Length: 114
Length: 112
Image 1 (cartoon, rainbow over the protein chains, first blue to last red):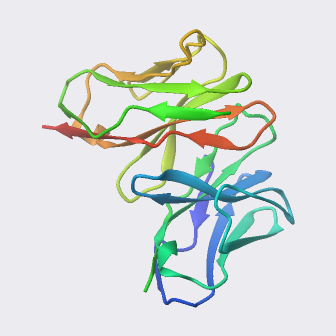
Image 2 (cartoon, helix red, strand yellow):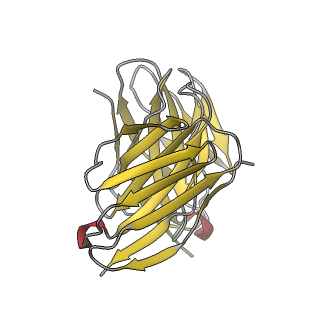
Image 3 (cartoon, chains in turn blue, red):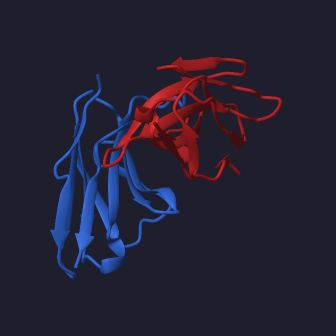
């Protein structure tokens, strides 16, 4: 089974801090994704990566950056955290370039910015 | 463009009732279709998928049939249990693309 592991289930940070969310997958997947999930807004794509050191903006990249130095690890960075970034963050991975393969999700990180 | 529309929730049912959650889609090509389930405090888990027209995906008593003529992928289960209480997401993905398009999710509450 595919395992996608997010480093923290719950995280509390302060406004202005630089925040790192880490995600690791164990299936040698080429593609990795970061989403945020908010009540009434569903899942929104922040960034995704289709290879090491490669990234593409999703629908809401403002205020975020990402890093993919190794194939198995994809990091989401909040450069200067703000209260409107309080949310549930979900990481996912997916094999290949074919659309018929599913995305596999981690358990999420619930981030609170005070 | 590409999009997925799900019925608004929450849906509240008694145990052993029949479940239908509607999902329709708009796509610029020939999509693969997925249902995911999210239990409280967890991430999304793949429930089932279908990759071409008339395919039926099934898992854990849930079924959905890819209907190209009605652009639909409705989720059904004959007899729900309390443990099925969760949020269900319909999603599509296009061939040669990695991006998924998710519906807004439908919360299901099953009462004993």
